Amino acid sequence: MTSGFRNSAGVDFDDLYDPDVVGDGYTATFLRRSDGTPLRYASANYGTPGDAVGFRDQTGADVGTRWAKKGTANYWSVVNMTARGYDHSTTSGVAVLGNAQFRIVFHANGTLTQEVAGDGTSGLSWSVVNTSTFARGGNSASAYQARLSWSMTANHYTGTGAPSGFINQSNGASAFTSVTGDIALDISNGSGYVYNGQFPLLHGYVTLTVTVDLKDPSGRVTTKTFTCDMDMYGSPQPNS
Image (cartoon, rainbow, N blue to C red; front, top):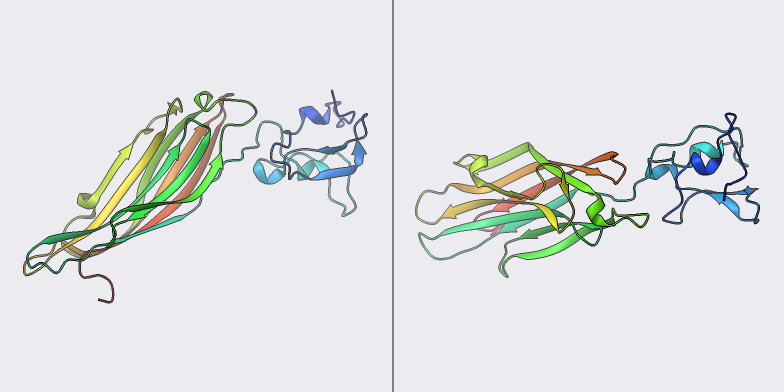
């Protein structure tokens, strides 16, 4: 079924814009299909705004610019994150570590999650800060390929020791990898303190920038980035 509306080149609107998967696309109530339903496509916010087609709504905006151009809409998202960790010990001469950790996971069920954790008096505890869906249109997660990478964009440490010595990573997708199972980038960072002796790091604060590339079943790659601030205290705790 076609929309019944065409641009100046004779291309039907259904071939110009991505379908409205989420259900929040702009609805052109003054443009209706043969069955009477108004035209609605994916919001331009999810992709590249379409070209003007000469049909304007009551605000004077061309409807084509309100919808996402065919093949550009994606609905997964990433958000900036903050991970904090600290530890505390009253035992003289014992090394303690404040550990902050985060991970981003592409799941085999077609969803993506971002999670943070930090050591504290109750141990390491994980929480999810963002969930979105990357597998759409009836495609399985295995039809997509993900690539994850990161760089340190800021760091501050008190005490001695190189930041690189306190960063640990596990990356299941350093190159494009099919999401046939859960794949993740997992990074931890810490600051340590030794009572009555030398301390390697009392406080560490770093900002990491993570780049996420996702290749869809058509081979088109979408790239998104986010930052993670990691704030770590060895013993004593802040303000103690």
